[in-house]
Length: 234
Image (cartoon, rainbow, N blue to C red; front, side, top):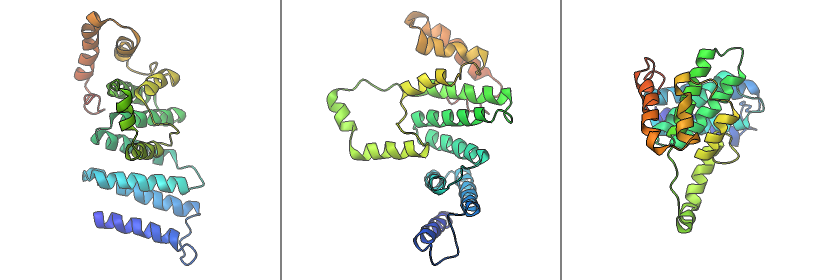
């Protein structure tokens, strides 16, 4: 499978390099779409086999094709892309970008008002809320730590990950928290979990926090579809 993925990648490079001497025209929408569909299938198989490095490479290939394309990818393709990318980020332990990807997925689904049901919107909203709140709170850093964190390798990595989501600025926990209000996420989540945001981010009651939050967490754990919807991982 790795050999096949590498061959596909090399074919793509050769097609671009020798575009004048081959019959492959990457400027044609149908050609771009065929390549995109191939990479999405490749991504699905990589994830089914839990070859996460190959899955990430496939995601980068897909992003490159979307950048190359003059027409917007189909919503179904973007849904597949964001769904798989969120799983890759979670597997890599990058919870911040995982939540940022779910936000992209939420906005995409919300725009497809005709095809999405209220139940589906509630499920993705709830997952986005839990993922955002579960994002690690960044530690307070000294000026020296800040300088050490600004090395070129780290910055380049964050830039590449942000690029995969077409983000102008890297996401932060604070920006994702603010976006919960911006996109009216709270009005769609399960009523039993609406208070979770208020207890953790809105009001400051340390002595009551444990009791209040436990009710919400118990609800998540006892919900019949908690495992199926991946709520339990948060």
